[in-house]
Image (cartoon, rainbow, N blue to C red; front, side, top):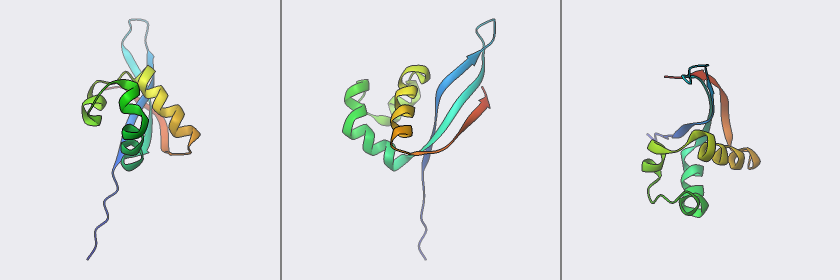
Length: 88
């Protein structure tokens, strides 16, 4: 029996704030983990200045770094899904 596991990352690239600067809604997008890992090792690690992808994902700035990843994924037709979600 073969089990295939497909890993995806949900990233944020835009945030809507209320008048009190509280985070209301996030624009999220989904990319394949294999693609993101490839892009990380090829370009993004050097661009963002982090050695480890998981560490980067814990601290990245959605409106800057998230937007860069979104633009690359969109250009390469790698966005699996996207939409707006209520912020945590």
